Image 1 (cartoon, rainbow, N blue to C red):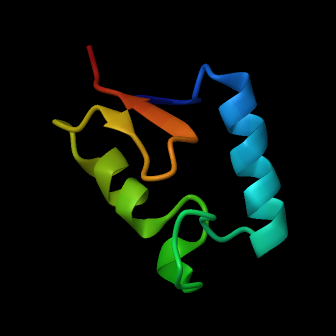
Image 2 (cartoon, one colour):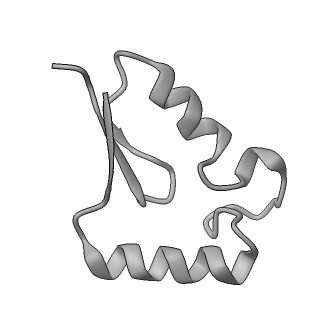
Length: 67
């Protein structure tokens, strides 16, 4: 498994700005809970799923499957 930032540098900059503004909580989520603190619970679970490949909810990170 590998996790990397989105290749779109403008998107990454915008999301990081949003994370700063929200104190580290996903800027795409309305609720500010431990589950939405970056890296969010949803993506941590997806990272543990050997079959999952794709972006996190806010598109900051991308997980590749083992090859």
